[in-house]
Image 1 (cartoon, helix red, strand yellow):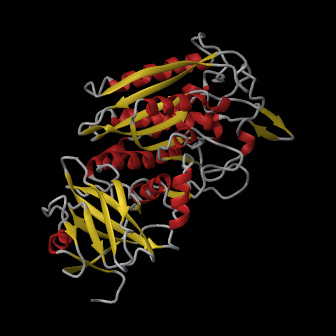
Image 2 (cartoon, rainbow, N blue to C red):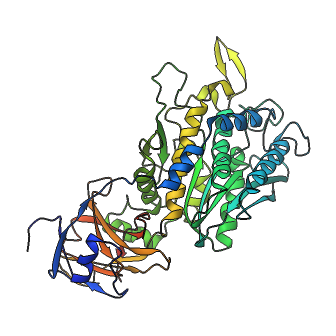
Image 3 (tube, rainbow, N blue to C red):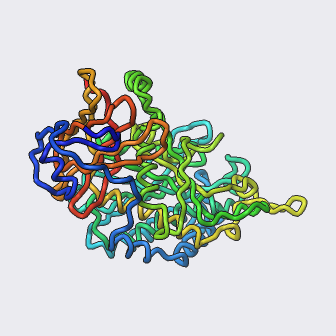
Length: 471
């Protein structure tokens, strides 16, 4: 046997699949050591397919600017502001967003539906009286596996210095008309396409008062048993210029992804501690996937992945999904200016305060939209993340046996095993193993971290799923 830890020994059926992942193989076939060999491919990023390139070209910064300006024109979008004034307040913003999304959906051939998801929020810390809160939700139904769902949100409510002030002007241009503009522009562009999985575009309310809109949305999915395999919150994505004298960074967007899952159980925590899985939670895998498909010249952006759930002292709508055990992450600009967030509009000692539209860069928001588009489309077109991945721990051996549940997608071509050193942040090696449900690799499970991802006939790859120890 070769001594290199990058050389893998597989059965003849699995080794044949290394050259072509679509090689036929029984779902129950087990690849065993030393029958044949193949060198693993170096890990790489994945360029967009033709349809994704068309989607990215269609994202329009002028349309994004028009959305942000319209949202700012409502004066305030505070959750406690007017619900029935046609010109000012959160109700006017809600109705305009709903009408626009319905207009986009008209071009979808019936694949996109739009609804107002309303509920009464009881009295709470920042809700002094029972208050109607409404999410505006556009759902683009998948054409192959519609039960698999990916969600993107921005929050359309706004605030000033006093979180209970529902009457003062609260432009909310960056926080978060910018994120809503991303969501709406993605809905417009994707309405005429046919993703294989379902994509949900949601403008949520109540974020500034306590994540109430997204909490309701996430719980609605959870109660329905929805298979949410990825969620993104776009919150404060308006500019790469902090307007504080520091150097501009117009080609970077941060992506916050937690490691230890928010909804981890005590039993899951014990397993994580035993195997050192702090960096392999489902949201961390989602972050790795985004960096693979959305970072580069096709989006014009660098995705700076931050290994935290969110910024210090702050939180966004992805947390509502994390609490329900869904993989979720938050996009935000590279350097914030806190004079332009959660502030009354005023000038003090020559310093402009307030979340004003002049501090937004619409080309930057368009690039953030392209990052989201690349992530969502790549997720929706690929097979789902492999399920029930386990690593055989029933015996002591210097080899590694992995097993997983074979997916049911009609275009599923096979699987890749990926791995990295325990000190490495990202996957560094991959090996196509064919359409099998078991593989044994001549590489010690004690020395590296493993994952398994699915591949379709066109080469689209899912996020990787790390294995749990077999029982």
